Length: 285
Image 1: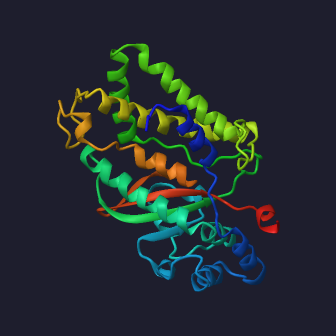
Image 2: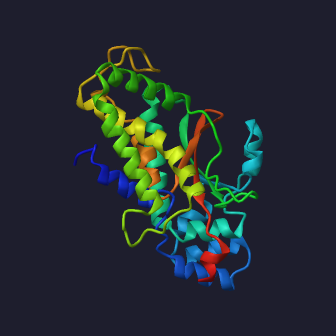
């Protein structure tokens, strides 16, 4: 597999923030016959849409309070089951994709540990976000700074820039192919075209993840070494000796979700994942 093959990123664009939702038809039945989010979650487990272990799993929490996600306040808005009907239906529709994203989140944390990521992995916090805010714009994430990811990304890019401009054209091709997949312009029958505002929001976030992932892979291929220490990684360490710390975030995108970040909590570390919510129109079909 050629990591610089644009077709790989065109396929990623088709999947990005489009969960497969294999159980959507069964979830529509729950929507019509079950009232509260807690009852929906319990019924989903009883009917085999989600594993029964998800009912009270301490490694999985839910929140629907993005506006209050500041400093330590986020701890007050976590629950063991979804507290919103659409959130419960959204995640129950895609148990396989949710499980894949959670495994990738654990791996994301593990790969960042050598670079200074703190805390024992505690689990995943799910945030189910509406596709559009009150102004009609689609905002799938909250802006934030990934200091570890940005630092490693800058180190990698600096190395490759020193090798000349040869890397920039294929990287630009990756992002363009991804954007084409997001917009649904590539003729894939399963892809629903996105409007320009929504597509721009997706590309704006994902292009950074793509650039960092592809650049790190290229640094490994060229057997480059770190010019400075990062966490427990000493200066002079080979990129090839450390697993790509950005790749799991790309896999989460491939699952249809988005990795917002890793948050510390008394020596533990939670991965926060964002899911695009089902809409009433999705459930009415």
